[in-house]
Amino acid sequence: MSGRGRDAPIGGQAVLEGVMMRGVRTWSVAVRAPTDDQIERAQREVPEGEIAVSTFPFTSALRRHRVSPHDVELVINTHLHVDHCGNNCLFEHAAIAMSRREWDWTDRFYSTIFASSTPERAALEFYPELPAHNFKTRTIRNVARLARMFWRRDRLGAERRFVWLEETPLPPGLEILQTPGHTPYHVSILVNGSQPVLVAGDAVLHEDPGFSVRTMIPYSEELFLSTREQLLARRLPTIPGHGPLFEP
Image: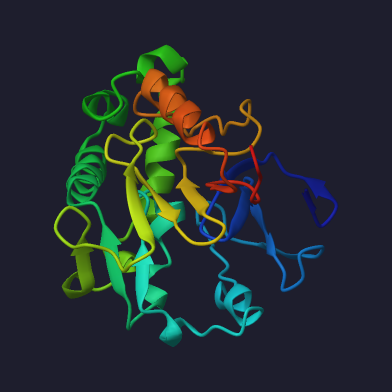
């Protein structure tokens, strides 16, 4: 990307509804437009040292299916990474279902790294395999700073609407599967019917087994791979966490 004819060094990070690219004095975002084959882009100058975030309507995707956030009665979080739960707050009338253990683990994780001046050390309690990924200290600290920008508890919705999956049964036709690995208490949802569908979340990142995001590491690599294999062995249409529906 260049701004006013000047090249700008860029780093990228996935955010709630697209990708943000940040340079020294410029930034750009790209998100899906109302039609799948178009991309909306925005670019502008911001003062050095400041971070600007542009927000695009997530609800446009719902409108394509003639759904309003007010129509949604139940939201189920497979896990609580911000890219999977950061829009819970849009569904003001919905129950927000999640694992209590996942909530406790995630809340402690973010609280711990945000309170630490050395997040590369603090994160080891939660991601014990972190050293095996050979991240530079600078990279981990940059990711922690970005997490601080986007992790806000209020975006998970009102806590009075939380429903714990360990305690409350889901409506008929929905079955919770324990799918640890990406996080220790990750769950997936089996939607039963004439043609069952598996909503895998990040237990299956993508149809391509080689798909990865450099800074998106699993809690346990071995457990993640074993869980993925078990899910795909069901031979069901699968909605992965970061890709279109596919059939194994």
